[in-house]
Length: 273
Image 1 (cartoon, rainbow, N blue to C red):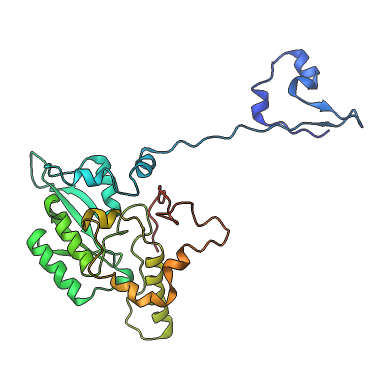
Image 2: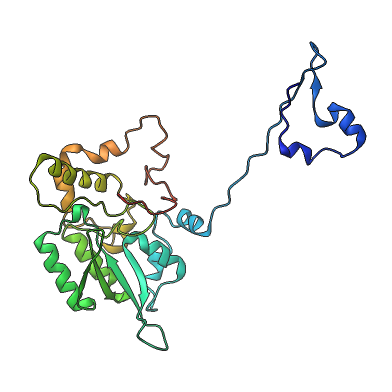
């Protein structure tokens, strides 16, 4: 005999002696051809996965816009918990000075996006000035080939981020559930292999960047940055934006006109290359 008895079936069957003697009680039908052959088809009810609070927040944020936009213009020196989560995608974490006792002294850390770890001289000078005037006076190099500014007050965030964007850099994708800063070897070799790795780290950075207009809307008042991101110039020949939305039929391109790769929920966790 052949049986297909999922566990879910046993939970719905009356546990009586007649039930065990009568196969029809289980929904089993005898084959007309042979009394010794039994068959049935049962399907389990699909389980609906409940979204986490963070996933729900992302879907309701209008592609990383709200409630951050509203929270940045309040008189409070901090942002609420939901805005703090969305702020990560803009490259910043809200922190407190642990050495200050009593009322919390909120400040913000800002992390740059630097594919291949490159830092043009004019960008370094800008970061140095911003840290001295609006931060805590230092720059911190991370293990993922990028710099962080600490001690930025909420009222200065827009000035600092817009300055970085207008010089041709970005903090977008430095934090949050997206593809983070793309690393490659820092070895200063001129071989074709090292040049290839350096170039494709910038291709990946450009390909997997979030596309939402929330960044320019919040930090640049909806205007375009004065200069494009410096690494994008090195990969123009790859026509990354056009290839990004090329549908190969494998389900990679999502039905989302704003974020064709990420959708409105972005990634479930951060991703590092």
